[in-house]
Image (cartoon, rainbow, N blue to C red; front, side, top):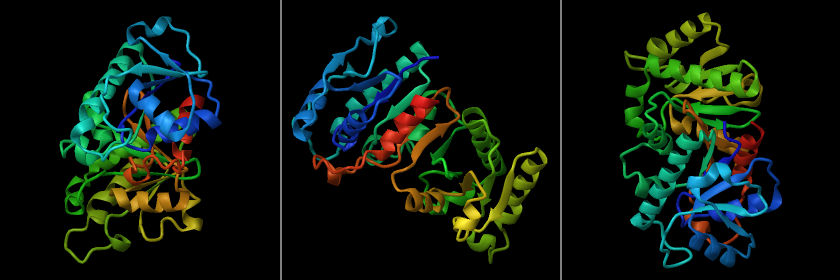
Amino acid sequence: MSKYILISHGEPNSIFLEILFKSLKFNKYKSPIILISSKQVLERQMKKLKFKFKIKLINPNNLSKVKLDNKSINLININYNQKKTFQKISNVSNKFIKDCFEMAFELIKKEKITKFINGPISKKFFLKSKYLGITEYISDKFSKKNTCMLIYNKKLSVCPATTHLPLKLVPSKITKKNLENKIVLVNNFYKTFMNKKPNLAMLGLNPHCESTLKYNEDIQIIKPVIKKMKKKKYKLSGPISADTAFIKNIRKKYDVIIGMYHDQVLTPAKTLFEFDAINITLGLPFIRVSPDHGPNEKMMGKNLSNPFSLIQAIKFLDTH
């Protein structure tokens, strides 16, 4: 098992390096951090944002023989000819993002690295509808179909059974197999990393878990899954109405709330915790974490972005 935390830059025209500089300046981490990025982009943004770090260039083919600490930025350089320090997010940086990811995946396999963070990426330009999100993109690269997104906070985490689907497509993906897989992945994660059997709640799909239609997913699909998994000794409640699940006296009973679609659980979670949450992909042969926000193009270069989610991401990997 590798001791390194590997970080892939993501979109170069984003707030990522700003929040990374802040994370490295104000916090000390035990695990050596390796950044996959462009030396040119790094130096330009340091100058623009008025940060000063030494850069230590790392040969990825000789990684196991190099002694690393966090006194400098340990950089694996990926060539990228950036014309301006910041420019509008577009297709221009796609090759750079892809090269960073491919280098990361190669090192994860070769060096058995188990801790990986990627910077935020514009799904619109990089994924181009081929994948629903980065969770699916990375899962495909490692031939893992049974994965899921966990937005983790130590008080309460959430897991959407479907990710970035248009709402009209969600019901077709609410299957017994899908829901059972999510329950198992979340339960195993908590047992492995938190040394506890989590209390889980599962939301209904329909308002108040009711439907005026003849077919009701809450009755025909969700309820039988909960009954089956409770018989298998999972600590699971539901289906619970989504409009009351996050009320204080209800949510405090649970470690994780599993919802049926993205915004059903991410909206209340972000309202409650803002930047104090991280995005963890479960079901991979390593732990992949990312800050729980996007590239935030409007804030590029302003030096006003909150690094807390990235700090939490690095801290999580540094202590697990």
